[in-house]
Length: 143
Image (tube, rainbow, N blue to C red; front, side, top):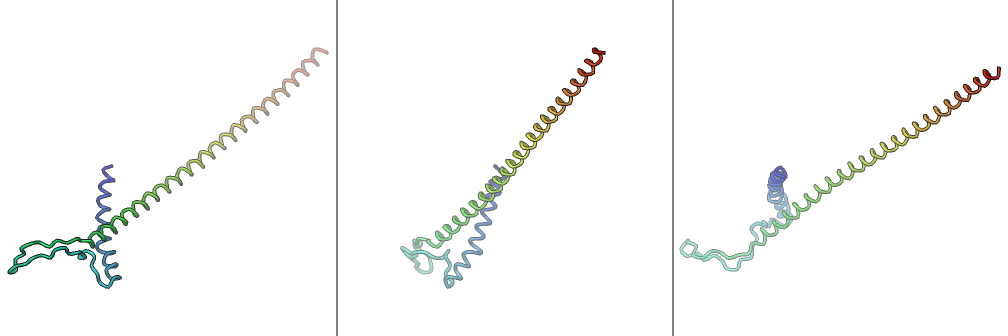
């Protein structure tokens, strides 16, 4: 479990980098240079008096929210694909094992059939020998 957490943390940084450094610039390029991280709805602008900020800006940063939504969907899609691949491999392994088990069962059945046939042949041979011995003993007692 610890390995999963460590790999998950590393994977998070990879997806964050993918969103921030590759996808968002591409989306920004496709939308005529709009930078989503700077997009915001200003409710109250900052009040600056004599170069000193008196009150801070109050704004809703929906651009960062859009980035986080894209990030979420990328993580969800990658986890989905990862689990899908794992389950597909597990199903293949189970199928291969079942196929192997079926082949093993067939070999065991064939082996049992061969043993039965060998036992029947041996029994028939023994019976023929016993009949021959009986006939020889009858000839000896008659003479």
